[in-house]
Image (cartoon, rainbow, N blue to C red; front, side, top):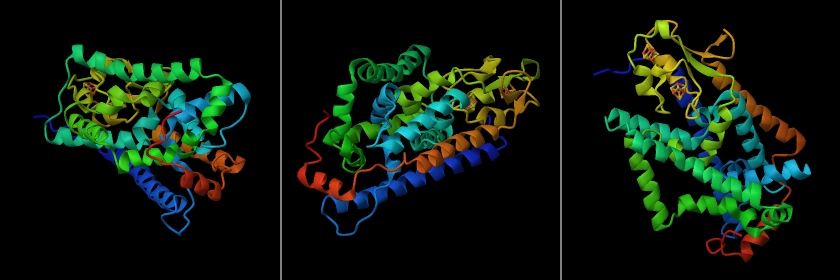
Length: 335
Ligand code: SF4
Ligand code: SF4
């Protein structure tokens, strides 16, 4: 049995970067929980609300990206969410799905489940008749949300959504989805974890509309994994390691929207000068170029948002306390 031996440096680097972002998200979630306890009157200790939790509000970000394009007005309710969304879009255009492969904590969890499935020899390759319909699900979800937001919401509807109480506290509702899931949500989460041991990267490959959007943008990305056919020994190790389930061994270059730019195929390839990260023309780049560029884009957007006042919102903590004291968070429905 092939042991998938490889140069593990890029894997270790990726796990470290992904793990760092995941730990930061957990920390931000904990700080947000403390803020919620204060805002809802359950604690006297004030903890500032961490804006980074807005990364988990992509629908609000899409609404406000449209609003930004139409009016030039930047989201002042969840500005950090829009900043992170724009950074991810730029990464998609320039750096494949580097956001999915190197930053997203859900992608990290999905990759870990895949690794467990690989170690336990549970991973299966779904037949094409199942794989293709499943692959289309994330695009259907993307189409659904895009249609509603880009074609059905006018400016007045967007302003109403933005100023709604729901939008103001949607971060807390998201938190309770994970802290106190309904029975149905819990079963769905359990299903997603278990199925991810059998079908690699199940959530990211089949269901995430955010990843679907970045994958479509990545079709324009100049960075690609290229394969020199004459050097390939057809061992197919690249196919077996690829989290995107791409048949790398059958391509001259990988332009699939499923490529998350992880570099695992390059690091496992035993043939000299066979797989490499390239841009148009003969230029090759060291694998580490991609994560370095991903992190640079991410932190440039962060620095820009801090310097221009587009990271923290202008809502005072006391106003949030007033809002939380007048609503039942669990009863509040989508507008
Ligand atoms: S590209 Fe490399 S890893 Fe993939 S089949 Fe060819 S030699 Fe093997
Ligand atoms: S093609 Fe290579 S870089 Fe792209 S997802 Fe597969 S293993 Fe990662």
